[in-house]
Length: 256
Image 1 (cartoon, rainbow, N blue to C red):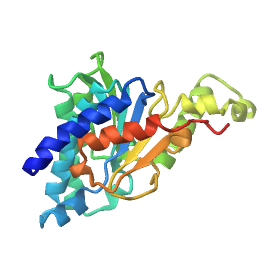
Image 2 (image 1 turned 90 degrees about the vertical axis):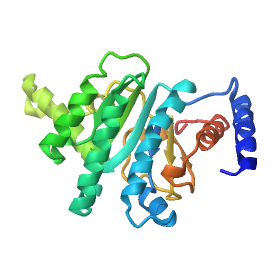
Image 3 (image 1 turned 45 degrees about the vertical axis):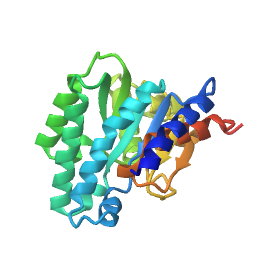
């Protein structure tokens, strides 16, 4: 950062904060943390692990920014079911980095509750267990809720929710002829990975891509979406505040 930027950056941040005073703010923000590999290549790194590690370091910053701005829930998309098809070396690297992220969020450095959302059975047992163990230590902590989407696919989530709903009704003795009536918007919502949490008000996607890529397909039906060309490792607090400002200027009609 240049000397001029060091002067202008806090001034611009202060301006954005002023513009947000008294304005509507999202209670649940979902982030598609995209662009780690492209950031690494364009930054001159031949080893893309630098991008993944820089992106992981940004997650803690996002959690702190969200807490400062009164956000209740943050969902971060870190590993999709499609990502599991990458090279074995890169996938193992991602497992290690994401596990470290969950471990870090579980420390005293953060006041938050961590929840893993995804089809964790797709992960190696020792990886899933490490993440579950760290997340479990945050149960009951005050502060915002942080959902880490790992091994996540939006279609798979809906399938899992319907299966869970049907299993619950079968276990309760509901006759087969009545099962179809038990499948409602409300009942499916209760069996999603994010059950008990509000749907995201705002979805942020970095790196210039303008699609949801299967992220929270059910929950994001009426979410506001904000795209930025900035790669995730380069995402700054002023980018976050600009997203909140843009959200505050939109009129949410929820399809009405």
